[in-house]
Amino acid sequence: MVVLTDRTQKRLTMQTGEIAPDTTAIRSLDWDRDRFDIEFGLQNGTTYNSFLIRGEKIALVDTSHEKFRELYLDTLKGLIEPSQIDYLIISHTEPDHSGLVKDIVQLAPEITVVGSKVAIQFLEDLVHQPFKRQIVKNGDQLDLGKGHILEFVNAPNLHWPDTIFSYDAGTQVMFTCDAFGMHYCSDSTYDEDMSAIEADFRFYYDCLMAPNARSVLSALKRMDKLPEVTTVATGHGPLLSHHVTEWLDRYRRWSQAQAKAETSVVVFYVSDYGYSDRLSQAIARGITKTGVGVEMMDLKSADPQEVQETVSRAGGMAIAMPPASNKAATAAVSTILAAVKSKQVVGIFESYGGDDEPIDPLLSQFRNLGLKEGFAAIRVKETPTEATYQLCEEAGTDMGQLLTRDREIKQRKSLDSDLDKALGRISGGLYIITAQKGDIKSAMLASWVSQASFKPLGLTIAVAKDRAIESLMQVSDRFVLNILEEGNYQALMKHFLKRFPPGADRFEGVKTQTATNGSPILTDALAYVECKVESRMELSDHWIVYASVDAGRVSKADALTAVHHRKVGNYY
Ligand code: FEO
Image 1 (cartoon, rainbow, N blue to C red):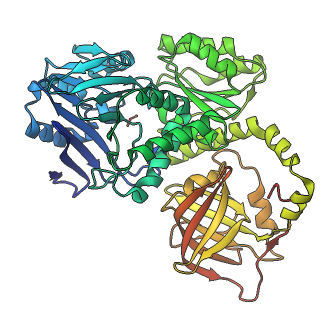
Image 2 (image 1 turned 30 degrees about the vertical axis):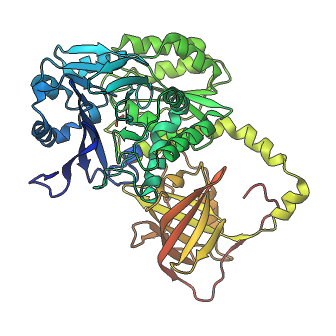
């Protein structure tokens, strides 16, 4: 069933369908959610998935975003009289899934809300009225009758510390909310076409789950103890049923790789306070791009012992300023201060929550303890924009690079010298990649560029994983390849080789025009081509980006392309 809003054609729609015996998916389709809001970077909209299980008792698993209030509640009422629902299972309390909990509790005052201890605590702040509750732990079961015995799996940090999965033994459906999801909106309820969605699946993992890789592995271990899972009913995007093993294996592989990182940073944030969560995700993503591991910890609910242990084994800490009025969070900051060591690095950022602890006193305490700053304090003075998130991501990358610098230099020295010199004889041209997406733009000097196909015309570029521009070169993104001219490239090369501070405008003082695809063209380049990313291949330290080319121009017919001759092969 599809319901269209009158106001905005095909912008917010509903879809319902049976996914297993007695089990109905109620999917809120948000076609145009396109803000560059970290994991929404691919701009394919999203869905908020909720599920109704009708045993002898009736359970609703999660709700929807409040923007769907009317549509969702009308759809639900078309399926069941809400007061007949016995249980509301809360997988996670972020408002994109729990935005209508209060409405459901009002429509069904006798309903029992089922969730983790943390989820129930968080809900009290969200619902502001008494409700029946049942706190569940890992392994607890809830028998709905007709074979639908739900078993709960503790899955903290996927995405907040409140998360649980629910496995229905009767249907072998696992309800996982954020985990294994993706921001991808289409009429397909399922994952039939893997190639259409795998880039979104990966991007979402990188943004939301990679910083919680250890928690992903713990949850997978708990899932391994359950009988077979035939459908993963996610909270975002299509449900996984055609390639379940492959999707779960990818999470396992990617998380194992993340968890192997020799150095890690703890990112402290406060779930559901200001922009703490989103900003900390951007910082975490910037850090993971450098191969440094991340552990996310919620200051409000973290166990002091765990804070102490995590800090003492980390190379650094990034801390979102908590609300001054929250005692648990401010106590956690004191625990961090007591646990840090002088060789660690620290970065602090405001949450813009209206009650932030001031940054400077905390920063001087860290300085007095001998810690270096991994990035300059980020002061957020207005509602975060795309540029704020870009700044945070780049600050995270700076911190990761600071922590890995010595190791990188050592690795460069360790190559066999003959091989190193031989490899250095591979030459390339000199290029500058430029890209703009929404309000943010970036650029990178490149040399590992090669034409790769005739039909369609296409080329490949190797982009180091920790490059800022990598975030603007996801599948479907557009960019410009500027080709530099022999004898006339020094000024541009010098400019773009500079180390830019996080969030800096890389084009200041550079002459540019705008390409049809919106990215900057460097006026002083010899030629340019407009490109669209078609696919990406992952290597250990680079992405190979394959792009189709649809327009281009040469400014001087007789000039030659600048060539990059190298002496060694273990660096650019
Ligand atoms: Fe989809 Fe963390 O909420």
